[in-house]
Structures are given as structure tokens and as C-alpha cells.
Image (cartoon, rainbow, N blue to C red; front, top):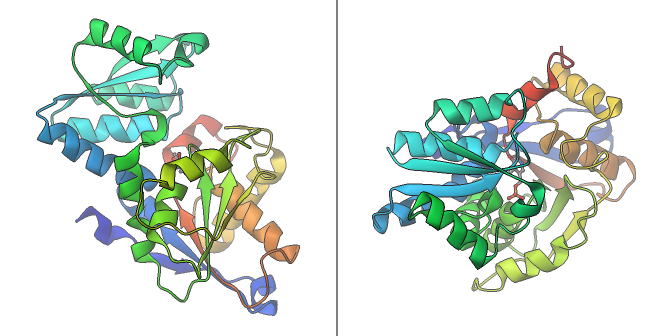
Length: 298
Ligand SMILES: *Cc1c(COP(=O)(O)O)cnc(C)c1O
């Protein structure tokens, strides 16, 4: 089973010990080299559902560095399903490593303007896509639908009750919604937004969990650790990633997990995360995206 690969590592730092804080990392990045991290959980029920309906083509949306499309291309390739990726923005002169992989895995790519991309959840636009590509099973951007959230609700089952704080990065917030559904009220969930200007996340999360019988209401979203916006970075963040890797032998991705981990360190140092806390940080994977950094990590 792919989920047997998950492991928990404990982080040792002087400032943690001084505050009697236990910090562990749930290594979802180790699940699988291609379908890593949270993307596996978001895809698994969606793929099952598509196959149950005999639908052999999956279509989804993403940017040029999308971990979601990368994972979906691989999963479809394995299951012998067709995959179509609708890509935000004009076709670039040089394709990203991510998109090159998608093509090698048999994904059909369609580049659309940013204005068209904004219509991606509208029924008239989806009908236009169906006219062009025929029937397909649609997975929204980032795998953010009910089955994606249901898949992510299994993630807390790897985390024992002694952890009173669970941290994770946020993109679409599907993973956090799943973690709220699968965790317990004595566990405080802290999400770190990887994008700028994401005040809408609060409402999105509320709507996502509404249809589940139980969800944890003990959570907060941090908006101060986006480092300039989605897929943006600063020397301070790169430095942090390098030090973290050197000290703990754990690679972080610059888009999500490095920003979360930087945020966790900062919240502990500022006393926002209290002494004696027992924290689980979820490593959601995404390491394939680091290839776009070139050699600045070396
Ligand atoms: C996609 C992704 C996220 C964001 O997950 P959402 O469910 O969209 O919030 C976080 N971390 C990594 C590594 C990802 O690839």
C-alpha cells in the first residue's frame, strides 16, 4: 500500500527544547516519488469515482508548475486513463519540467488565456471544453472537490491524539478542509497560506466542510508567510530551506512547505505557538517543483 510509506520525523532544535515544544513532521512527501504528498489523497477517490462511471478521460486545471496536474498525469498513466490538463496562460517558449513530465506521461495540454482560465468553474466554459474534447470526468483545480476533501480527511489518521497542534500549507484549502473533517477539537489546526490576498479562504473553508457530519472548528489561517505571493520567494526563504536541509536532512519545497515551516519557527519564536505545545507539521510534498529554482539550492 502506498500509504505505508508515511513516516514521522522529530525535529531537534535548541529553541524547541528551551520551550519544551515537540515538533514532528508527517512525511507525506515520502508516499510516492511522483504522486507525492497531499495530491495522492485528493486524487484517489476521484479516480475511483471516474472508473466506477466508466469514464476513461480525466480533465483538470493548473499552472505551469502544478503539482496537482503532475500527480494526475502520473496516476492516469498508471491506470491507463486519458488525461487532459488545461493550463493557465499562453504557451511558453520553453516548457517547465513539470509540463514536460505531464506530456511524457501522456497528458494532453491545452493552454488558455488567463481570462479564459478564470471561467474554469462556469458551466458554459465546461460545456465548451466538452465540445472540444468529448466526455470527461472533471476534477477542479487543485483537486478541490468533495471527494478530494474526503481523501484528505484520512490524513489526520496518521497523527496521534497527543499532538495538540497540526500545521499545514494552504493553496486551494482542500487539504485543510479534509484535515478539519478528520481531526478532533482538542487539536488546533494552523494553515499557512502560500498565496497573497487570500482573505476569501475563510469562507471557502466554511463552505467546503459544511456537508460533512463533523468538522473541527478550532483553526486559524496565517496570511503573513506568502513571501510575495504564489511561487514567489526571497533570499531569506531559500536560506531557511538550505539550513533546514543541512540540519535535518529534510528537503522542503519553496512554494508550500518551506513557507509553512518558516512560519512555524516564527510563531514559536514570537510566542504565538505556546510553550509545551506538541506540533505536527504536515510535509505535503511538492518537491518536483524545486526543479524550477535551478541550482540556487546548491
Ligand atoms: C497542492 C499543494 C498544497 C496545497 O494544497 P491545497 O489542498 O490546494 O490547499 C500544499 N502543499 C503542496 C506541496 C502542494 O503540492
